[in-house]
Amino acid sequence: MQDHVTTHQAEEDARNERILIYLNERIIPKAEAMVSVYDSGFMLGDGVWEGLRLYDGCWAFLDEHLDRLFEAAKAIDLDIGMDRNALVSALLETQKANDMTSDAHARLMVTRGVKSRPFQHPSLSRSGPTVTIIMEHSRPSLPRPIRLATVPHLRGLPMTQDPKLNSHSKLNCILACIAAEKAGADEALMLDLHGFVNTTNACNFFIVRKGAVWTSTGDYCMNGITRQKVIDLCRANDIPVFERNFSLVDTYGADEAFLTGTFGAQTPVASVDGRQIGNGELGPMTQRLRTLYKELVSSECAKRKV
Ligand SMILES: Cc1ncc(COP(=O)(O)O)c(C=O)c1O
Image 1: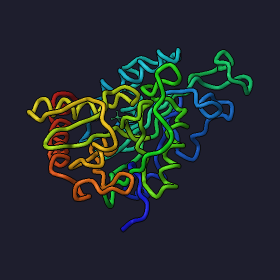
Image 2 (image 1 turned 30 degrees about the vertical axis):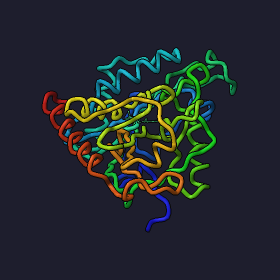
Image 3 (image 1 turned 180 degrees about the vertical axis):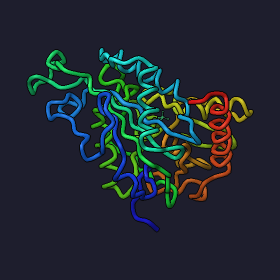
Image 4 (image 1 turned 90 degrees about the vertical axis):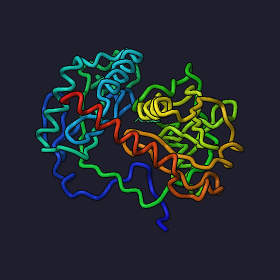
């Protein structure tokens, strides 16, 4: 069995060495796509981003991603300098330049731009913002379900660094991931300040108990678009779904557990803290939700062109 995997593992694809990158209104080869060491994103993690996925010529749930990006930019008082249409055009131009039609993943990043001096104050960011899109050929290829470990790193309160901000500074999540790896797992399961199970360091977390789907209240975790789609799908298909507090005892005893995120859609969980969940394989509810999610992506995409 493979020793260590990541939730964002994709098939090796040599074409990704030759991709073209969008950087501030230019589309340029990967090797030339450089930002300044004075860039606010590099220096301070001062920026926001979205991960988007291309299925059969369609960027799934694009409106929701743009809503979240603009909301985050507003929250950190960052003027993207482009409206929604301009961002969509940049995405489509990058897609066209890379000749991609399906199975691609885009990371759209906006930072506060290049600073005049190497210090924190946002007013020092004089030229910018920096807008970039990395678009890769991407087919998720997870060789086995994910192993999780709980870690000492908690999800913070909204008044410290709101976990709903998809910010470039992800150090809390990265430290959680490192701790999980050191404990022999693939990814971290993070608790909230009260000790309830909340989310993983990079994906939202669900359990299945006696035919019902449970996820956290939504406080302290990323307002994942895939998370919301799974909740909506449960409601539309008469699957009991609860956004509620639950503990590790509930989690260890679950019949299934899975993660959600734009990259992997629904990713099965094999174990948490060395306790096997269910039979440790992809469970029937996770499989059902995967099928429903695929159908949703297809039907949403059939309604629009982009
Ligand atoms: C911490 C965290 N949780 C969950 C998610 C999944 O969100 P989505 O389903 O919108 O991709 C992300 C993705 O950016 C994330 O960074």
